Length: 380
Image 1: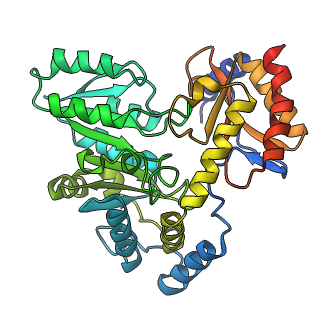
Image 2 (image 1 turned 90 degrees about the horizontal axis):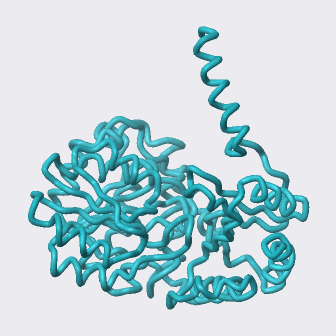
């Protein structure tokens, strides 16, 4: 490789370091309290989940053996997909290798050049990347501001063949979520295709843990549900669900994210299906997680984050300055507490934060201790 090429890369890395925005992959020390994980129900080491993973591996081997359109689609894949469809009350679906790929597939390939996508301003990067790579025009509405969305629908709904609205259920960096009932009311007034990313809502909300759409009883009004197997389902991979066979058939034939990759391993699929069965009957665990989420916000005097009926397990503690955010993260690590330090471009400038990801393994004593460690940093 040429020196010119490597020098350019090195200079760009130096810029990130100077701005305190540099990232690195590293092995963290064993922490007594992990508040970075999105394993909200601590199922990764649950005996039923590990047993399901092992059995699938024994039955079908360590890998799928190919692309899903060649030899890689196995009975275990079909079984998991059937369970997901029934859980989410959708008739058709497909599995993919990651949530990023699923969002890319939907946003890149379904909207056409004569269409418009209206997306929440704080959508996940995987959705934003899909918007930028697709053919359709897109506009952002202010975060969770359905009045702004209404204005955009009123101004644009007659100018495009199809309008899409895309939002997350629980927003991954802010822990808040939209009023899906009001969003559905807008859908009845201004017909659009509603795309919902339930990555962080799955397991956390709903009578059976199917997500925010189930919690708000609007599943039948959501046209396309995207979700991941890598959070509450304690595995890896993703899915796209719809009541339209045409939507799924189109993606199977057009989405390179699905076509040109060796498929999910049986071990991943077996783990996810076992976790799904646990989540479906885990209402007590969901209530416990919501109680923990409410308690910690009260301890941190974040009552403004409890306006939603059910608080989510993602609690942002905005510091602002990236240097101070990293210092606080490192201080907590020294105390045996692992918390994510989130900086631009993942979040907007001047909103660097700790992202506390709560789970059912946390005690009330843990919450009180965490509050006592963090509060001096945000009140000084």
